[in-house]
Image (tube, rainbow, N blue to C red):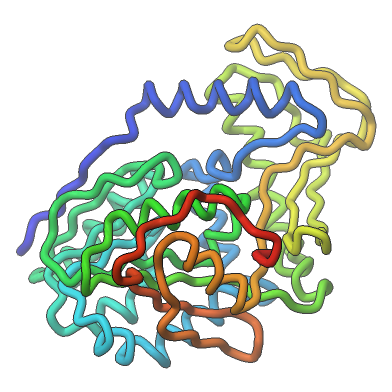
Length: 335
């Protein structure tokens, strides 16, 4: 049986420092914001796994259908011997790719949740004893440095997670991915597509309240990590569509005026009645926007697969002779 290895570049000290910085910066500004990465502690990851099975949450099942339908073609076009998955979570999204790649030697899941990496890694090594699983505990939004592995390599960034980044952040991440790619390597990108607002909002505000629990869980993260005294019951989960930016926003709305103490930061944060804390954006795309952002990052879109206009898979390769651009978004690059 091949060993399961895990490399840690995300230390507890670095995670704590990043959380403190994000909370200090985000909760003392107007409007208040938090980056979505803090939604994914162990409990948050469990809730997100549940969300992916909800009837309202079309992205997960649509992406699975696309991967099932096109995995063999992706395998034939890439010939990958190494599969690197950013934001791998439970690694369920990649099963079709793992099955389809005949020459796959190494799988490198990258995630901020050590528990998710450990569970998935041990399961995969039990199921696929010939596969080398080298997990990487890291925040890929702050820079990518991956272990050496045989090529060709396929980097998979699925789940529509690219939409959680702001436009300039997306270009920075795509450029960092491009810097990893050698000739013959490829990127497989999953993106949620722009569609009817009602369909979009329902996907982030399910009838069972699972997404609401997932959103409010970030308050438990702050209470545990920073000794804060957030009362999740004082906040309502809100999902709304911003047509200007073409993205969904998840927010927590205060039901009443109150103050929150965060002793670890020597902070007391006031909330007015109805004031909102934004916890996530999820941008929705058109094919031309994806193609343009890849171009700026030094890649070309080679294949584009969609299902009923709901979701898209993009297969891109490095543009010969072109390196990533300066990270500036021209006006036509709306999602």
